[in-house]
Image (cartoon, rainbow, N blue to C red; front, side, top):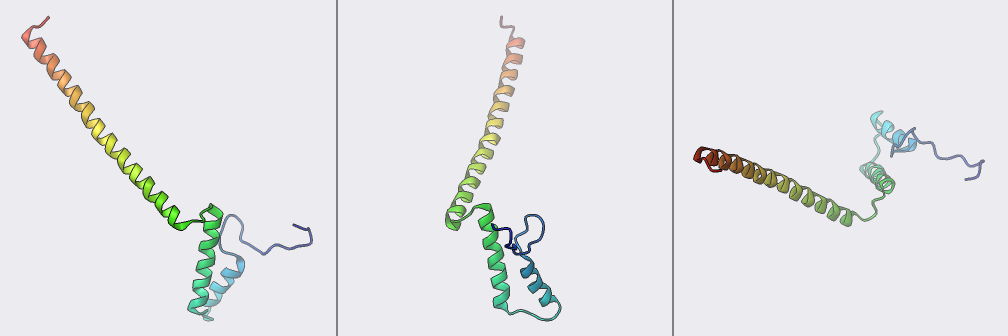
Length: 107
């Protein structure tokens, strides 16, 4: 970027809205209501900037990825729950067997 070019003013940090967008919103609060189309345009720009910054360019693919991650999480939780139950069952069964063998006097 040439040193003479002045970048568009932005808020500090990683905010998605530009200063011009905020000024339009402030104008709406002061009674100079922008149209519904203006508000939708602001929201669409903000969402698109956010998606660009986080690297999401394929919304349907992203949705499928989230679905797959949810499915994997549910499977993992189920395996942990059922695995813990199986381990407890074996442990209690082993202790019960040991007590039974001790009572019977098996060497």
